[in-house]
Image (cartoon, rainbow, N blue to C red; front, side):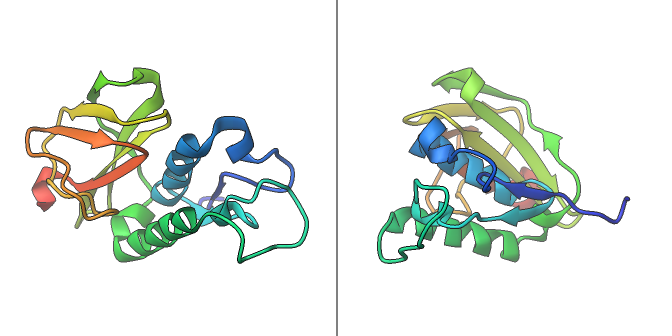
Length: 166
């Protein structure tokens, strides 16, 4: 029904771990998509710690602290920006200047009051991406500058205000 929401997730108990199949760089982009696309994000047991086994005892003291912090920042970003909880997604035309064009996607999220542009890079390293629309110069997720010439450097995810929200 129209009132139903979709659950978004990277890992679940029926699938192999995304980290094992696609690597750490792609995992961060996939988690970024989970928290910036419509639907309810789900973190499957240990995903936020980089746990590689499907089931078993959760060992909270082991794992990737940076990945856990990344998840926490995405949770906070989604909570702080209603546009990331809105029902629609609009593709953003872009050109990949450096990196694999097939590993980059860009889209806009808006709730009518705020518009954000999300750029995801599922590859290794950093991609340089020119956006066809003007955006703010600071990544809302990291707080780092992204440049003022319309080109953003994205390792995994960049979330910037659309020009009208700068």
